[in-house]
Amino acid sequence: MIPLAPLHPRLVHFPIALLVTGSVLALAYMLRWQRPTLATTAWLLILLGWISVFFAVLTGLIDRNSAPQDPEVASLISIHTALGFALIAVYGLMLYERLRSPNVLDSPSMRWRLIALALLGLVLVLVDGWVGGSLVYKHGVGVLN
Ligand code: HEM
Image (cartoon, rainbow, N blue to C red; front, side, top):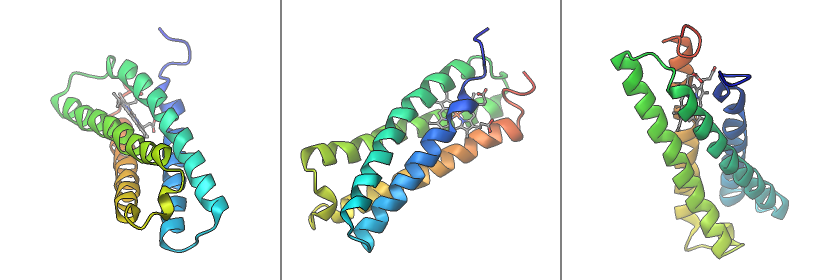
């Protein structure tokens, strides 16, 4: 038994809070308030959020092994897992664009691509958190097993 297990519920608050706040600030910058500090803060939060997703995924994959074998739970976990990997891809793509061009949020040609990625990431993180919550609070995963 891993000390402090299950670890996953202790770590998932970080990607949720960091990525939601980072995406909202990036959208606010692109759509309305072009203040340099807003863009810097958004990127910092997205970077920290992206790093924290790896820890969420790693601990989730560990906890997944002790989940009950119920088919409904198994399919929810598959969706939850796929959304977790999609988060890595979406925010990884945003950070890659930032690496290629530090002022990408100001680029007219990239603007709608970045807005779409930030919105997609926001939806993914909220849905993934909601599915994770229903695993625990509806199906008792990590509580009853
Ligand atoms: C991709 C791999 C992932 C797997 C295999 C996974 C698996 C699990 C499992 C098995 C649970 C039930 C509780 C437990 O036993 O720990 C859970 C809960 C949860 N997961 Fe994940 N997870 C993954 C990624 C993520 C990510 C990236 C997030 C956040 C964005 C997340 C958010 C949550 C939340 C909010 C809960 C409910 C925690 C609670 O309220 O106690 N998971 N997950």
